Image (cartoon, rainbow, N blue to C red):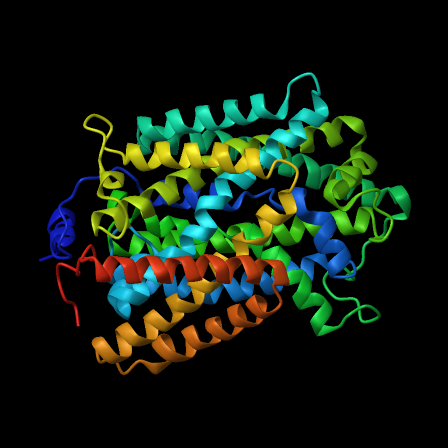
Length: 454
C-alpha cells in the first residue's frame, strides 16, 4: 500500500503543517517562473561578449551540465520528499553537519536572489520613469510579493500562471519579429550556425567562462524541491517537474539567443553590455519592441522571479528553523494561510536592507549568488552517491555514481571559473557558517534528526 503523504512526512520525524495543494503542472510552472523563460534578456550582453558571440553554445552547455544536477535532485526528492531542498538531502544523504553547510551555502544563493531581482527591476523601471525613485519601486515590488506569498501557495501559483503566460507572449513576439528581421536581412542579418559554434572564435576556456555566467539563468530549477511538502502529485512529481522545466527553458534560451545573435552579429559593438538585448530588440522591431522587452524583464524579474525566490528561501528557513538550526520562530506557520509567514516577512526585510546597501553595486551583489548555488550542488551530488551506494546499498553504479560524478565534475569546472570576488565573499560566508555551527554544538542548541535513515 502506498504511504499517505502526511504519514510519509511523519516518517521523517515531522508533522504535516504546510498545505498540500500543488499539482505537477503547478510545480512545473513554479520552476519555469523561477528560471524566467526570458532570463537572457537581462544578461545577454555579458554572455555574448564572454563567449565571442557563441551565446547559444554557452546556454546549450549550461543546460546539459544542469541536467545532471537536476537528475540528482530528482533522485533525492523522491527518496526524501520533505521541504528544505539540498539542506535536507545532504543532511540525510551524508550527515547532519554537512546538511547544515549545504543549507548555509544555498542560503547565500537564495537570500540574495530576491534582493538582486528587486534591484535590477527597480533600476530598469527608474530608467524608463525617472520621476519615480528606485526606493519606491523596491517597496512596491517587495510589498506586493510579500502579501501574495503570505496569502498562500495556491494564490502564488495562480499569480505565477498569469505572469508566465505574459512572458511567453513577449518571447513569442520577439522570436517572430527577430526571424522576420533575419529573413529581410535587417542589419545585415543572415542565418548561420555561428551562435552555436564558430570555429574562428572557439576556445574551451572562452566558452566555459561564458557558461559560468549563463548558468545564472538556470538557477531556480532546484527550488522546486523546496515545495516537496506542498505537492500532491506523489514522490516523483517534484523530480519530473525539475527535469522538464530545465529542458523547456534551456531550449527557449538557445532559440532566443540564437535569434538575437543573428540580428546583431557584432558582439563587440554593443552600446552597453547591460542593455545589449534591448538594443537588439530595437533593431529587430523598433523602439516599441525595445520598451516591451525592458518592461517584460522588469516585471518577470521583480515580480514573477522574485515571488518564487521569496517562496523558496522562506521554505528553507522554515525547514532549518524546524530543526533548530536557525531561530525556531522562523518555523511558525500562519494559522489561516498555512504558510511560513515569519520567514517570508524576514526575507522581505532582508531584501529591503540589502537593496539599500547595494543600490549602486549590482555586480557585487550578483557575484555571490553563483558561489552558493554551485557549492551546494557539489554537496548534492556527493549526497546522492553516499545515500544510495553506502546507506541504501544500491548496486546501480551508473545512476548513483557515474551520473552524479559527471554532474559534480561539470559543476566543479564551472565553479572553478567563477569570478575571484565571488569566491572571496563565498568563502567568507562559509567561514561564518562553520563558526555558527560550532556555536550551536558548544552551547547545546543543535538538534539531531528525528529519524536516523542510515
